[in-house]
Image (tube, rainbow, N blue to C red; front, top):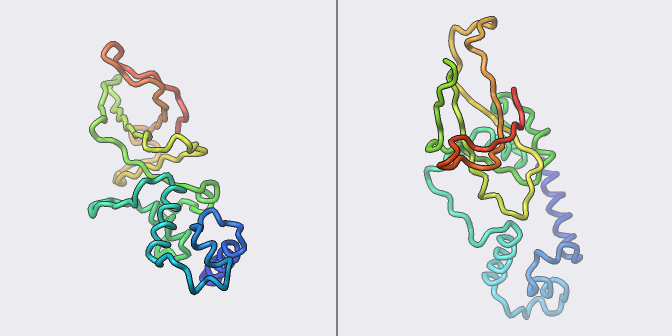
Length: 197
């Protein structure tokens, strides 16, 4: 994988030097590499060049400033496995739940993870069955991006003593899109069923 990474970097460098990806490279940097005689007399300092390059990258990713994650951020094991797969690191153990990471990762150029909002969880009474609702706020996705696929991964502790033929240990999962949230006049939101398992 290291050889593949080096090859990719060499191709990327050639692409930038030949102007194929010139939009990412700051104007001063383009002039610096395109005119060999002027390379020594470049007026811009390396720090300025790096800050301009950083601004272009932030703009490309739709960010206004460099992200500053908190110290107590919890990263789901699935996301770590996915990162290690793309970074070329060997996984020390099988991926989370043995999920085929290559298949999921090959269809997307951006992967986001959302945790449910515990404040909005409910336990409605439904004919003696325990029901649990989880809400995910997806409003942080930029408007210019479109969702091409989504996954819901649920992790729970193993129930000891569960038998295959005992229906009390079976779960049904319905996934809804909330079209219109609940209001004071209507207690239930307007939803659309997306999938059932």
